[in-house]
Image 1 (cartoon, rainbow, N blue to C red):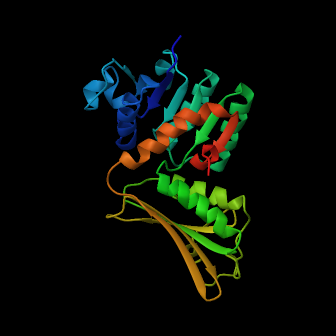
Image 2: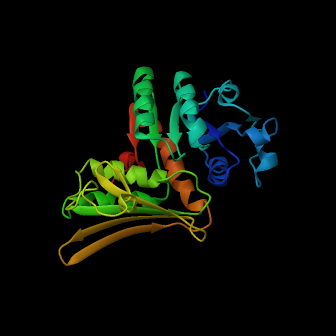
Image 3: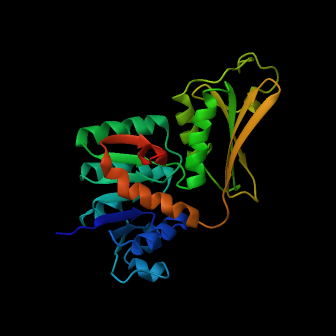
Length: 269
């Protein structure tokens, strides 16, 4: 009997996922059994990612092909255009899913949650695996209980196609469970260009900045009369900070049934 968790990584040759694959190779109780990458289909993963593992890992063009090799967990790290179908396909095959892809909507997650419940499988959706982001979400949820005014700003490089980021969506979802912020002047009553106030998500204003020089940054800004609190995460150029959180997600995704959002939902504090 194989005591290792068997893992398939979709988008395995991408910036963050390739670093995760190295982490899986280095983890004794995980086994990387298959990968999805349309640009490298037909190759072995160690031919693309260096340094690689010591066992062959075939790279497939599609999720349906990859799932022909039995696995326990699928890590979704592709794009918003393909992620949802990959997730639903994995759930239908009886595989638990860790989602690292950003850009999925709340409506997408409602559909995914229904499928996970139907299949009695689990989906752990994490907008950002960095431990600093996990702590930001946690601390922001605490702050929202005592500081009723807040807004969210997310920053990324100019080529990031989705806005807001998955990290910002996850944070807004988390804060919405605490409540809605106070807004003294509604979007409707705003004079001038209303869009400059950002998007209204879960009743809170969310702003996205896309400029060269940023990797990924996230701010939650809270205000009270004569005081302000800013909680901010800034990412560097390396993908290594995301590996530990992703490995934690893989190990814990089978500990529940249905959909959970946020890495801290499976962490102890």
